[in-house]
Length: 512
Image 1: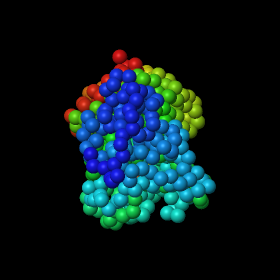
Image 2: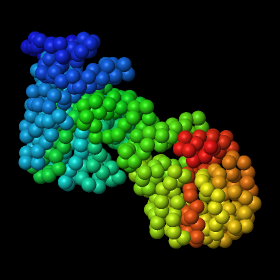
Image 3: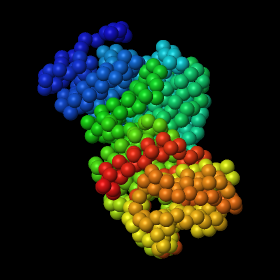
């Protein structure tokens, strides 16, 4: 390993720093000796971090890593790859130190700056990120927080207030209006000389424009400004060569588990789950879901993504998963829990799904999706109990676009744009798929993956469609709801979706 001059001798490594088995990685023993770390849990966390970075091939791609473990200024200043290198030590201004890492103060320009010169690194083969908070009272370049900089503070700068996030990336600015104060793991990696990916808590949020500014200045962090009353914590940071989206996701998982071992994780993550499952649970409250529900959700997500990728065709998915929380059950899986149904009136959650409990109650989807002359839609709906009703299980209005899976005459009633078709159906329970090909065109209603009936839509177009269930006297329980927008599932996709969704419902004990 190359060291700056002069090279310092490694401190004595204690038995505790070697670990109870004596098998800690040499890098962990060396770092622990320099940083004065003897706590067994902290050493175990470092072991996990180093071992997993090595086993996944990420260790060799790292330029430098700051694990911020130990709880004091001495331990926090050292860099993990080469703690003997004095130029890598951080100098702190206005920073406090505790078990969570380095923390800014609102009364000072809080910063942690190393002697690592940015000029040694190529921004066209570069990734950089940190684990911690991102909070700001005002989102502006003069009120930055959550900043990592290698180009006089401008290469990577995360700035946030209560409603948006700004990223200065070399130093081109990108505004993310739908990302509000994200805590956890944030990273950027270039994908070309002018583009890069922004990853936030296991999910690539979007590609962003990358500036071409060369790296100058020194690596460090800015945690607060004098004008910013919201200070930040950094619990881990790194810089490396360019990382793919898959590598960033793997790094995110490793870092989150490292934080979990230390008891300072900001974000829920199960390393065995698909990232979309973790984000959905995080945007809810993870404790609102049982382990059975979490596993069922992950089965649903990972299997819809695999095979024919039905996940990619569905515009929204309401899995109604949480028995403990109606609010969690009303969230959309495709939006990763950021969009939610709105209940008008009253509703309840049961082991079978969601039920509106008053004759005037219903739920509305937050965004309309089109039903024009050329619109294509597949609507998937699971009804969990056999109740005859004059109400509707899905509709925009009773006369224009609706489905009642069974009325008091044992008929399924499908109505489009003032047209209506009745289909024999003697039991409401089942998984339905309704395929619509457009105005004045055929539709097909499937039940449990078999054709239940068909008809033709009416000729009067609706400007848009919102979802609601349960009005007009219906109290039917829905156990699953999803739909495409602008596409109809193929026969193979319908069969695959049916198999996956019914297995998901079986995992929840809703069908046998």
